[in-house]
Image (spheres, rainbow, N blue to C red):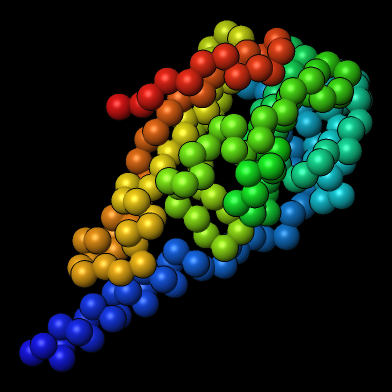
Length: 200
């Protein structure tokens, strides 16, 4: 029986290691359209990191600006008036690099007005990680009046430093889970981070 218990614990540990260090899988990035909530503006992003903002017109979309992005977006949001575009994290993973731009703002002319590094928005010592990414947020969106962007950040349910050795399936499960951490609020006009509130 002790041998069987050791086998089970070993299997759980191997499963945990495989889960926590698994390679992220991404489909090849293709031309993607990101629409404002009212569908009057949209940004087209190509696999060459070229972003183009369009306004929907009866005669067809009118191009407003083109900009080469520093990265392919994990999320990209457009305000209903097309005056602001927010890029959140990298499509291919942030690489756990604290100096990776994680939130970038563009204005009505396609010029970058603000950027926030991964270290500024995430508690990297506490987040769950896969091979190429620190998983630091769960929800992202504009407020109803679009005066602010709100990002709900997350951290690992269990301290990642304690997850190299687990003794049960429950511990292994806890090591893979994330819980709410903070709500970040960015002012849309300036792109500045204006508040950080602890989530329950």
